Image (cartoon, rainbow, N blue to C red; front, side, top):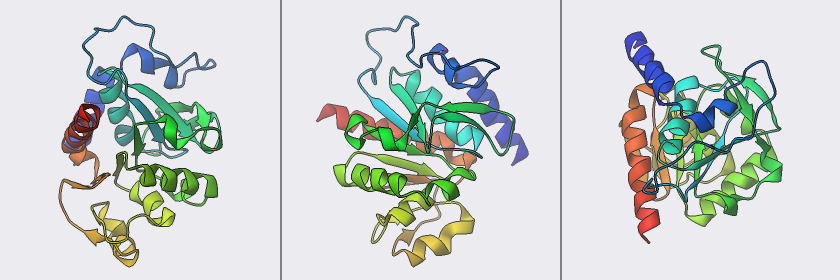
Length: 219
């Protein structure tokens, strides 16, 4: 397990594009998040707007990997949380700037919502503005991709009943008690919900996210 995590973090380090470097906290204020590097005209997701909803105690790989994966394909990535601030991963020293408060964004402004795991979802699920944003995004039919503890936000938002999901093993009972069907699989795609279990599942999770966005763009 430790070896797999090291591999994932190496991939993160190699994958972070120039435009995301301003989101990784340093000893200075964050610069504009827009990527100023030249981009090929054929990047598939250059029109895709991504919201990553997280906070203090985020899981580093589950947060940084989808950010890098989508940004490298041209997507505009916005990191949102309870308030604009610098937060730290629970499992490493990686820090990240939350660019916007969830209270100041509209679900209609994004094409996909990413819910990473870690300790952050336990805090986020207690905030009514987060739950309102999540419900509105779910109702739009656009994809929501959650991993590990990320589905905690979906459970509290009340959008998992009769849906099939996967999650971290420690919250399986909570998922079932909310009326969801649980599958112990690498990735589960049910309607607009894309869920995975742990960082080891990230490659399959990202592949499913990519396919879902391709279908969305083709409509």
